Length: 302
Image (cartoon, rainbow, N blue to C red; front, side, top):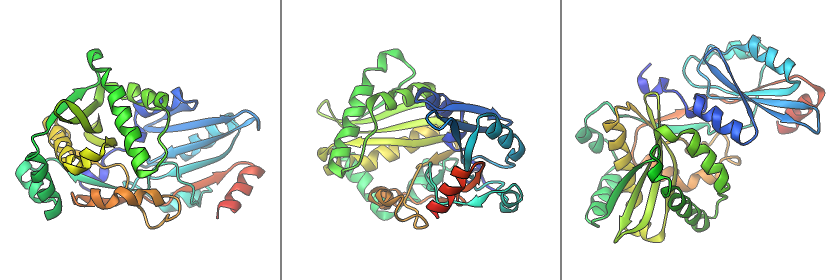
């Protein structure tokens, strides 16, 4: 399989585990697989989620953790690489509709030269990037590893909240984003578009292993008018290439297999598809129940 299909997901990194620990989860590395546990104190139990692990899956050791932490259930959202449905069935798992992570994304190969990469985009994307370039926007690439750049976090979050109001979607708290950015600090880059020294758009990119991932965006009405959102994707792709990353991950797109759960993803999926790349549909999640309550949950969510 090619590098695009085998690329690691951000949720299988030490940094993601650090972020989840900061917001109340427990993270454990079993072999090469990160699993996370959420304690449910009022029930004297816990739940386990394992997001996009590359096989083979350490099923027996997951059972050991489930027993130790009194887990009611474990949900695994498999990676496409080294996925073996028979192993899930053999180890007592059943297909589920519970989603914690995105189930579909678009990934691009960054090992091709920039000219060929640009030509691979849709005509619409190429045209809009060129239009944005004529707006004479100032592009600022901010590496959040440096303490002097921490002030840019507030600018990023303000732009994120703005697009949340415009598009009417929920934006998690500032603290939650701060925890996540702190966890990924060394590989975090904020790519801004400024017009006359005013920030009008931003994308938060995160590098890990050979991947650069499009984590979050923020934008103003003026950002949309100048097509800065297209330009910032192009700048992110070039940044990934410059940093030696070989895969670009858009992180999430709409998945028609789960129309109700990911309904909100429709708002940005068409935009991401205009950069082409390879659509990755991860396998449907699997669940194993360890208690009566867990079994009840399974039947209720079917």
